[in-house]
Length: 209
Image (cartoon, rainbow, N blue to C red; front, top):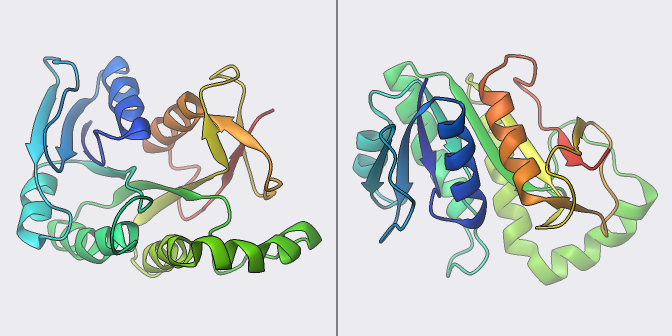
């Protein structure tokens, strides 16, 4: 499968690139500036700007699937994730490319979510601390829900480098605010979802087993 990975130079993006290459996929790594991703015969680097539609189209054209590991933390507008979907979704529809896997935080809500007590209590605080980030992630989910594409969104708690990468599961149960997950687990899960139809039209949480 030929995959374009947006945000390929980030902490998660690099791991997704490595995992996809390990499984024999052809990867086009979309990066904003420079890239120091290790060379591979199945890897090509594409330098572009997620805010530029033509740049996104050139990156996506000729691919079989799209992955977004983009995040808005540390960005001026805090709208990178949703802006990416506003640009990417119409391009995929036009090019008849249906498969997309994306990543966002565990506190981003999908349309049919039900909040538990812990999350009802933590939501106001999170909205105060990171309201724009939260809105960005939720807007991106909403855009995918209404896209007609075969989408999957991995919703992740705080990511660390600790724990066994294989020790994870995807679930409909929202993790507690203090829970964490290994970054490599997230990368493995995203590539798993690329290779199956079982997670389509869903936004599961990733948690430790």
